[in-house]
Length: 541
Image (cartoon, helix red, strand yellow):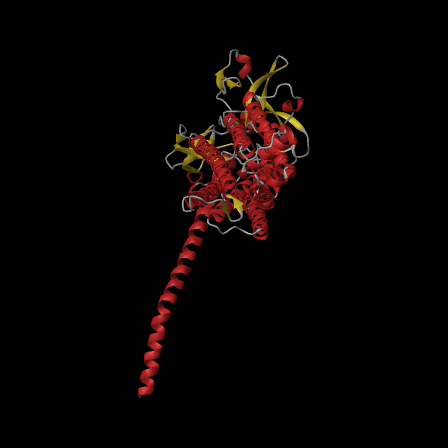
């Protein structure tokens, strides 16, 4: 009996000890499950909501708000009866394939009953490329277009009556449209029986193009317009010129760091070389994409260049974490070993590759389009009309910069915990290390400010529904960052100053802190060797 009581007491005690662990495990499991459910719901709702609320895709609908509603709930639109089950109140608008919120209005799936064709402007109006709006036709002849050329499945073409063949949708779409009168291919297009348009080897649905009368060789004809994919003008050139100058400055800094042995052999200099190299490569790809028309690139090339730019820019920010952490370790008198730093650099590149392939997987998944990065679709870089650039680019950069600034702040406070007469820290000259650290802190503060500005500009433009963003101030900011790097990373570098004074000006400074820690012992040995001779001279005297 006593033995049974002991076993019962032991079992109860064991159960009481296991309970917190089991409870924690259950809580952890339930929390993980909840997070998975939330993420699944977050990524699947955008693709399923439209199917549940609306009877058909937006591109298959027409605005029937002003149409005639019949007793049974159906609508009469241009002689076509749209059943009630094919009508719905829409709260969205789709411009160039991108979904935006819109005031409530009724739409009917007329294009399921009869093919549709989209016109930019109402009758007797045409698209004005100078003001990016619809303008009244000065002459009645501009709007007298009753027929349109249609391409059939067997390759033959015929001019058909528009009203008899199609339901006309009047959707202005995006504000900036491509109008290239001097390009011969601009006037070549094929409109198929189902309302799909083909131009330059690409197919456009009814909500990705619109027809308008345009003048060509003193003759007005119906011409399809698509949304602008490639921006031209002084804004693009300011961005490209400023970014190119920044690239040249960064290359100069990198070459100087590599040429000077004391810099490239130091952990600080090595980290800056990797950081500036990655940043420069990313900027090179971005400049190329801004100057190259994506229509002249293959889909594979467009996509690969965009993801390469993403990889290098992300890696450049991740490397800043290693530099900041290295300073923190030095001022904590616990320096990071060289082999461990090499492992960290390898892991950093691995993380960059992992992020790149994660973003690729999201792009190729069935996630709602507004949550995708958009790289390789309409643009070779992130599609700024979507939220993907915020989720996969700006937020990782913000997290990385926050980690770098945290490590730098801890390193800064560690300096004040050192004795006032400190000469060496972790085998390095204290004055040199402190000077480099202060210069580095100024640099990352400027980096943080510039990229915070980029994120705020994007969010503001996205809320205002700016469909195409070319911010030439971004190029000016990148150039300013390169100038800051030139001053604080190169000019303020003590090793560079010493090398310059010895090899260029020929006036080497004779100060203790100008020597690297590796050469400090030479001065001590020289002093010791000179002491006997001094004593001998004193004895002689």
